[in-house]
Image 1 (spheres, helix red, strand yellow):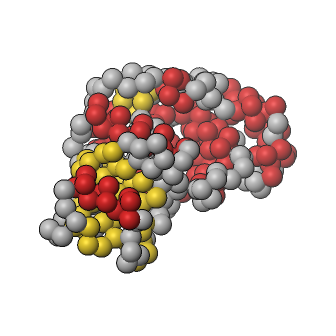
Image 2: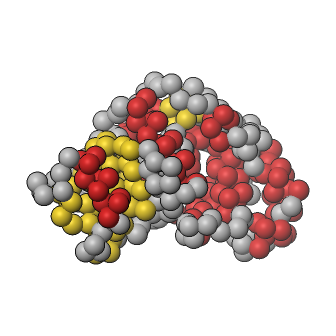
Length: 294
C-alpha cells in the first residue's frame, strides 16, 4: 500500500461523507495511496477515534466491477489471511470498499526467508479453503485453457517487440513451451487468488495478509502458486524451482500467461501493469527454460 502522498483535503466531499457514514465517525485525515497496479482510487483514512481504514473507491468502468467482485468474495470466504471488511457501499459510479488499514505492515520486496515462508503458509490456507466461487473459465474466460502459447505462435511479433527473447530463440523454443503448457490446466476445485503478488501481500510477526480478491475463483492451486513464485523470483527471492520443483508444465503455463499479457497495449488507468508483467515474464521464462532444458 505504500508509498502514499499527503492530501489534506482527502477524497471529494461526497465520497468523504459516504466513508463517514459507512464507518460511523468523522474522517480527520487521508493519505492517497499511489502504489499497486489497479485503477481504483485508494486512501488510508484516519477517523476521529484514532482508528484507520483503507478506502478503495471505484472509478468506472472496469474498477467498479473489480470492487464488486472483491466484495462478493468477502461475503463467501472468511480466512485468517484476509483483511477485515469495515464497510461496503455499492454505487453506480463510485462504489466504496472499506478494509482494515494495513499500511503499517511490511510490504515486500525485499523478500526474506521468513517472509516467503509466511506467504506460502497463507497461500496454503487459501488453497485448503472451501467456498462457492466461480470456476476459472467462468470467471476469466477461455483464455489460458491452451496454455497461452498457441495465440502467441499465430502472431509472435508483439512478444518479440518486448525484447525479452530473440526471434531465433523463439523459433527453437516456442513449440516446446506450447506443448509443455498444454499439459496443465488452470481449472480445478481449489480456492485460488489468481492475483498473488507482493503488492497484494503484507507481513507482520510471522503471518501474511493477502488483499485484492477480485480475481479469486476455483482453480488449479499449482498454477496459482506458480504465478506468485515467478513474481517472487523477479523481486530477488528464491527461484520458483526451489519452492515448486519438477513443474515444467506449470512453469511453461505461467510464462505463457505473462507473455500474453505483457505483449498487450497499456491498461487505461493502470500504466505500470505491463512493465510489471514484463519483469515477471523474464523470471517465468528463466524458470521454464530451466525446467525444459531450453
